[in-house]
Amino acid sequence: MTKNIKVLIADDHAIFRQGLKQILADTRDIVVAAEAETGRDAVQLFRNHDCDVLLLDISLPDRSGIEVLKQVRKESPAVAVLMLSMHREDLYAVRSLKAGAAGYLNKQSAPAELVNAIRQVAAGKKYISPALAQELATHVSDDRQVMPHETLSDREYQTLTMIASGKAVSDIASELVLSVKTISMYRSRLLQKMKLRHNAELTHYAIKNQLVD
Image (cartoon, rainbow, N blue to C red; front, side, top):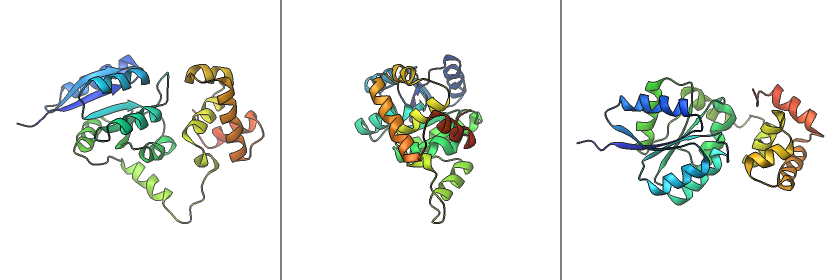
């Protein structure tokens, strides 16, 4: 008898979680063990439930999905983490895989692709879409020029996208549960690394390179 794949879902949108559960309910070998809507809840449920695959939204309300990914990987390297996002694969996929994700899937993917991805990472393999495979091939190209935003840390990149989306430093600090001083430090670092002078140039860069919607 085939062992069921136990999945934990971490996403802050109840309707999307319900959709995932409905898709997985139609499979013969995948069961949803628990669900969470925040990063904190995801870590807590992960510690209290035996799961094989963690479906993790990259944009959670209280902390970055990549932060949760790093913590889960540190505590239990055997658990496969499949990142989910509405963002284009080239924006976060490479960062996710470098942080230890077993795969990255766009939320607009077909149900069959989701099921296939879960089975693949549960078997100890990596899952990447054809589009992501092309992106990874581009990243290892010797003649490819590194873009300024690719030199940023995960926190700096997150700060960049949030400022470019029109959020004030104080709002970002509140949303990420960090001090204003810390967010200001990230802002200063990313401006320096990217050789930008102020938020207007930062926003222009982000829009030009399609880093924000």
